Every structure is written in structure tokens, then in C-alpha cells.
Amino acid sequence: MKPAIVVLPGDGIGPEVVAAACSVLEMALAKAEAGVELLHRPIGLEALQKVGRSIPQETHEAIARADGVLLGPVTSHIYDIFDPISANPSAYMRKTFDLYANVRPARSREGVPALSHEVDLVVMRENTEGFYADRNLLDGNGELRPNEDTVLSVRLITRKACLRIARAGFELARARGGKRRVSLVHKANVLRRGDGLFLDCCREVARDFPEIAVNDFHIDAAAMHLVMRPAEFDVIVTTNMYGDILSDEAAGLVGGLGLAPGLNAGDKLAMAQAVHGSAPDIAGKGIANPAAEILSAAMLLEWLGHRRGEAALCRAGRAMDAAVDRTLAKAQTLTPDLGGKSSTQEFAAAVARNLEVGHG
Image 1: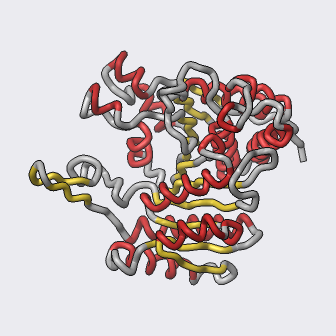
Image 2: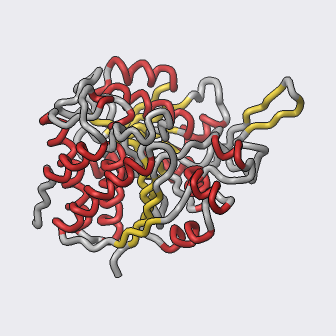
Image 3: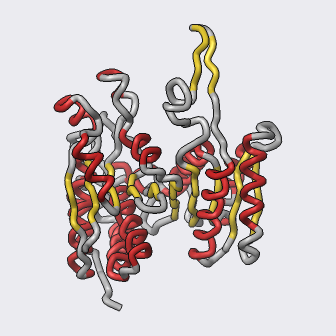
């Protein structure tokens, strides 16, 4: 049976960049002769306004049966305005389906105006705990307000989560080859128990990967070194909030969030989701950069291909990534965020023209 990917358009520019990504995805699959069923379902603000739920039951059921999800950006704070009980779709799916590994690569690409041209790293971010704790465990998103003048932000760190994100990071460093280095980012000198547990777990896992070099940084030092010596980083393994911040910093080095893909992966399901937000200020203008969503979809195909042992899916994913590179290098159809004048669909069409899928 061919795998199923649930397509969720999201909010703001989401429908535009997801449509662009799907056009490239479908062509890559066809060229690679890989069968995938795309199931389009409602989600987000539009679903909330129409049916009273940001994640309709039909959408939840489709995701539960699927092999993968392609999610457009969502505007998390908007849901509280319409219905405080409604879930932020992104957070809901990460926690409900235990998508614990947030894989966020950053790579310098030819033709892109960037602060650095020597970046090739991946931030492996723990995706279910930290300060972004489960609403079922704490009041709100990890915050308590005992009175109107006081807020306590509570962070959840568990051994289970630390061990599995560390293992995912070391396995990725092994698979990437190249530098074969894992950098552990923490603040154990101050947060001695929480970050101390994280660091201990990572070092425990490291013993199973003697061929991988390991170093560690306090989060503040990591932020500085990432700017000054980005080429030294390979795989960064860190907790939820630190990873959120560092991945945006890495994106800033290579040209911005329009080029920042992401994959939320669990043991049974993965969700492609660009790092950027829903950008409501440019929604409907047709100028959003769809590269991050296209690259996220490519990551999902490779994840599915490796998990299912289907080389055609991996070829399609690699072809999408390479086609984005070719399009950027030619610099003829860049979107406004990259200094060009092309529309969302014009960029996607150029990527589709640059698709070259081998059959080896």
C-alpha cells in the first residue's frame, strides 16, 4: 500500500506556500515513479471559524492513519482570541503524536545573499518538553500566575526525552558523514538540575558512538560561536527553547527563514513544517518564499523512504532539494525576501523545471 501524506494548509501565507510545495512534490514523485497519496484536510483558523475547532475530528483521524504530514505555518496566538480552548495545531500534533525530534538544517546555498557561505549544520531540537510544556501538566504553556503581578515559567525535563533526542542527534551525525561532530548546547552551569540531566544523558548516549566527536557549549557561548565560526558545527543537540532560538540564528546566517526547512519526527509519524511563521502581513500577495516548505516536504519524503525502504521516495526528496539549489544558483526567479521580484508560484514553477530525478 502506498504511503499517505496529509496536507494541511495552515494560516496566513500557509495555503500559498503549501500549494507551491505540493506542485513540486507531485512532479518529483511522478518523475521518481514513487506512489504517494496526498490527502488534503482543513486545519487552523479557517477550520476554527467554520466548524469551531482548529483541528477537526476528520483531520485528527486522517493524521492518525497517515504516514506523514505536510503542515503550513500557523499563527499560534490567534487561537486564544477566538477560542481559548482550541489547540495550536503545531503544538497539538507534536505532543499528541509524540513528534519528539525537531530536525532543522541550515546550509549555505549558491546564489543567495547571506551573512555566511560556510554553513552546513543541523539543529536537533527536543520537541515536546522544556519551557513549551504540555498544557495537561501545567496551566497554560508551562506558565503559572499565582497573582496578577507574578508569573512562574516552569520547565519540564525528563530522562526519557533527553536520551532519545541525544540518540537521534548522534545517529544523524553518523548518517551525515563529513565532520561527524555533535555539539551539546545547555546552560548546566546555572540550570544545574535540568540542563545537568540533559548533559548527563547526552554523554551517556555518546558512549555508543565512539566515532563521533563531541563538544559542548553554554547556550550563550554557542550563539556567539555560531556567528563567528559556523563551519565548525555539524549537528547541534539541544533542548526545546535553545533549539528554537539557535535554528533561527542559523537561518539568519544563510539567507533568512524563507530557506529554513524543518521536520518533526517521531517513531511512527513525521510532519514537515517550515521554520517560519504565517506572515499575515503578506498573506494573499503571492510574494512569500515557498523554498522552506518545499525543502521541508523533501525532508519528509527522505524520512519516509528510509523508514519504508523505498529508494524512489528518497530520490524524489533529494531531487527536490537539488532543484531548489539550482533555482537559487541561477538567481533568475528569486522572491522579494531574497532580493528578487518573482512570485511564490513563479519560484515553485522554476523549481519544478529544475527537477532532475535519477532512477539508480
